[in-house]
Length: 168
Image 1 (cartoon, helix red, strand yellow):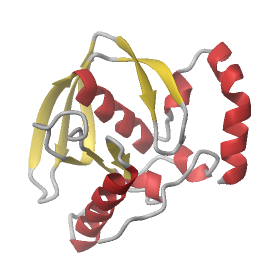
Image 2: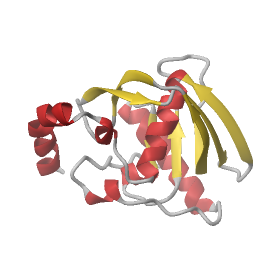
Image 3: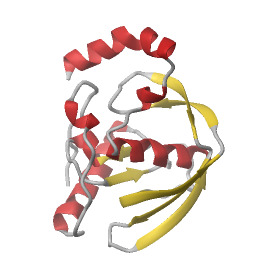
Image 4: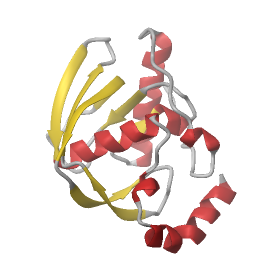
């Protein structure tokens, strides 16, 4: 379909909770196609519909840039079943260009969702894919990776965040 502009921090839509997809129709398939095109151009690891301004419970994860065996995965109406452990790792976000911070997240996740054809699936993941799934899932809930930062880290980023918010 088409590359869409990525919503940058400061835009209120990033704090909205996304709506469940009732039917996987052509509109949703086109949305997934737009997400794929946009993610490839941005060279990111994941992208949620809200990051292109659409409040639908859809995201994609594509780790092929860091793992040649990885395949792009589509998650529609995802539900986190269980998380386990925790691990700290540097994280960024396409809605926060140039900002990377160490974030503590669960080390493992089990998620269920629908694929682009409406088929249900479950996936157990750890490492980077678990982090990407949880990061994108948070977007659907209106939660951002900066919400995990310590007060000190937030204070240190305050100026950069204000610049992003002004530009959006």
